[in-house]
Image 1 (cartoon, rainbow, N blue to C red):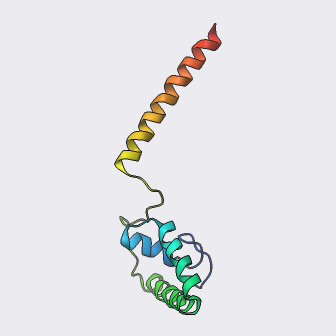
Image 2 (image 1 turned 180 degrees about the horizontal axis):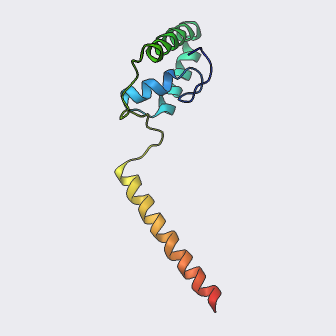
Image 3 (image 1 turned 90 degrees about the horizontal axis):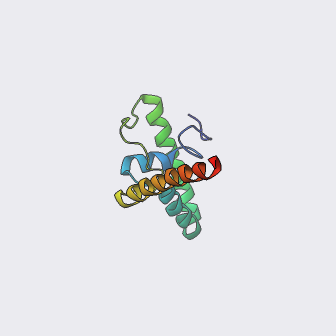
Length: 104
């Protein structure tokens, strides 16, 4: 895999692979990378290029991460999941109520 876009990540898949390995949010990894780019651009760019080279070697030789370790793409928690369920329930109730108003 050459350095470029891929189906897993934006540039070389480094942040998405790291997020999958650490089970973090991929955008949190990207934010840390951005902060490092502002603080130390040369070393961060060299480190990213090295990481991209290593990640491409993983793909070439079949040393990929296991299928169960996917990057966390949302900030879900049990509390947010229960809120989403309540909101979905309220939306269904509201839709039913709205439909009953239009029948009259």
